[in-house]
Length: 77
Image 1 (tube, rainbow, N blue to C red):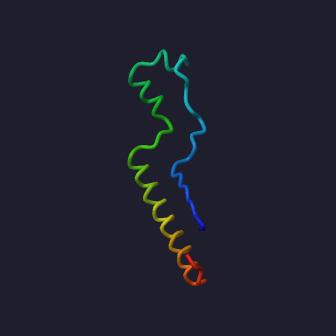
Image 2: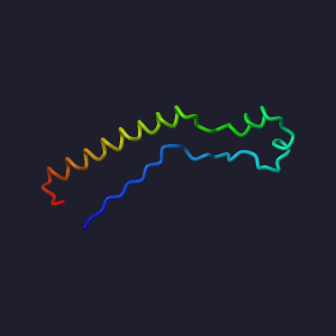
Image 3: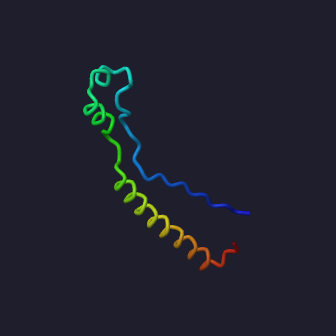
């Protein structure tokens, strides 16, 4: 039996994890500033959906190419 496994990550790694809970920047912030500080670097829902759709299209193309190549080579699945 042969198995092909794919894993797909659609977001970039966060290089700056932001301030810790004991950081004075957090401790001395009001609600509005806190929300703004903690929201930096996060993707919104629309960005996540767009990235997912782009990735889905790419993976679909990849699978179609692999399948076509296997069928053309007369490979036994």
